[in-house]
Image (tube, rainbow, N blue to C red; front, side):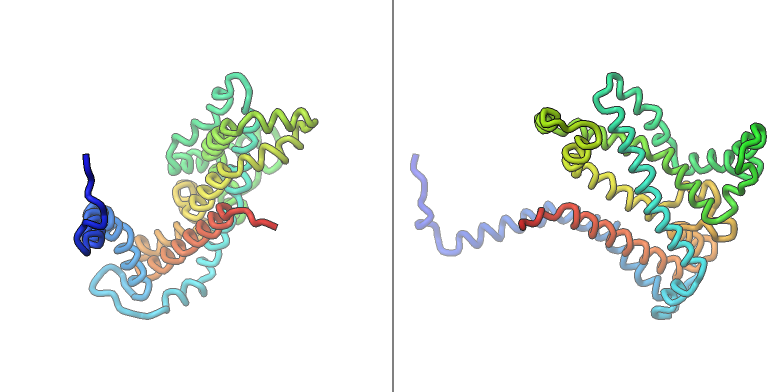
Length: 305
């Protein structure tokens, strides 16, 4: 069987073939590109436009430039919302991620470890708004926790768990920890199972045990899964809405609002769509920037010295 050598092909054959391949690839990519444009980029561009307008949902938006952003950074309630959002980011990194890591390490290698992790994993199946309602019942004034503390004459019985800032934000982060620690434990457990046994056995032969073994061998080899868990936690905490809405609706007043709650209230309760869009744009920029900075730092190749 003979083949036609490339030199025998007519001039321009290669470029024509590349154009056909590009046309075919474009045809296959077009539906995905159109969907991304309609569902992602178009709403983002429209939200960016609304953030530059005064608009209450009736009539046409009135262009006001950067007035809404100026209002955003001068409103003390929105500054409190930013601070609460930052507290959520730090709190969820320390508690749900930290507790998930501890559970995964304690359960790793144990017989029946699945049953050890299961009670921590079940709350993740409950919606955030339901978790908020449950903890609101427990922590409200004269709620289940206050009555239990009074019954046994324990301290903190007079605490106003959901009324005093920053205590209300702290207890809501604890509620989020109850819900989210299990799934973090599951992800860390998967990461621990993927670690090869040889380095661990070699370290044990050299005398490494306990904390030394975890710090020098297990933790560095768990880094890829840690990157995933921490990245998801940062994004999730920046967008926190359901638990806060279920427990306090951002109150009392606006003391426990997060940026997501502020965006919702501004747009759909105060009908200030321009300010809501400005908050949404700020939240998008912060979330995307934090994610990119973290992932770029974690996924960058190790420097050679």
